[in-house]
Length: 89
Ligand SMILES: [Zn+2]
Ligand SMILES: [Zn+2]
Image (cartoon, rainbow, N blue to C red; front, side, top):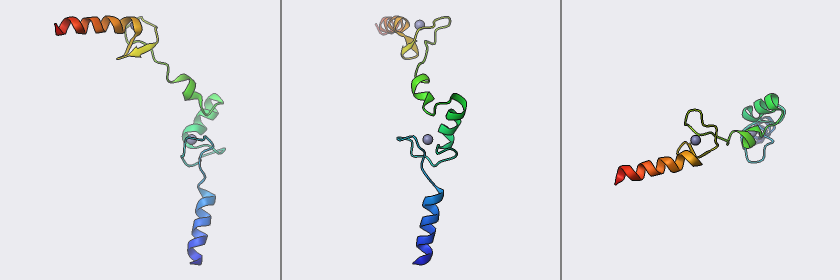
């Protein structure tokens, strides 16, 4: 009925989706969702996380190598595997 269509128009006008293609969240400001808006404001790049946050480091104290597996870098991971192999013998 009439009421229904008004309601739908109102809804689709009010709730837009984030500009970031794969995101799918509702907008918060400047066409971005809260999440991406914050990044846009803070880093001037709504996709900031994509480039940066995926880089993790080895959990061994004093080691600054990039994380490979199980919390270790390649060097410490192979050490860890050797230890595991010894323990299971
Ligand atoms: Zn978003
Ligand atoms: Zn390491």
